Image (cartoon, rainbow, N blue to C red; front, side):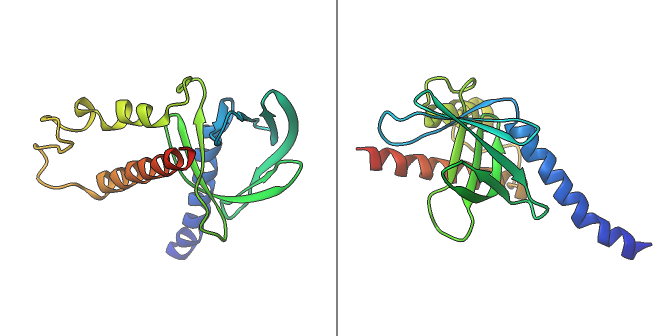
Length: 171
C-alpha cells in the first residue's frame, strides 16, 4: 500500500503544478516587458491556443504543459521551453531551460496597467503594512522566519533583482 502511495505522490505533484500554472495564466492578458516601446501581449487559453500581439499585430501560437511540468510555447517563429518558477498575484516567472538567460517574466495587464512591476511588488508585497508591524519588514511577533517566509522573501528579492537589471539595461 505505501509503495503505491509513494508512486502516486509525484504524479499528484505534477498534476497540482499543472493546475497551479494553468490557473495562474489562463484567461488573463499578460505583458512581456521588453526594452523600447515594443509591447508584447500574451493570452493563454485553456484549449492550448496562445494569442500573441506585438504592437497590435497578432499571431496565434500554441502552448502546452508537458508531463514533466515544463512549458512549451510555440510562438510561430520559434518554439521555446520554459520551467515554471513561481506565480504571484499578477506576476508569472518562468525560465528558459538549459541556459542562464534572464527569466521570462510576465505581468497581468489588468492588475498592473501602468507596467510598473517594481511599484506593484513594493505596494503589494513589501509595504510595511503587509509584512511587518514596525515597518522594517520583520514580523516582531514571530521569533524566526519559517521556510515558507524565506522562500517568499527570496522570490521577492529575485524579482526585484530582475527588474533592477531590466531598468539598468534600458538606461
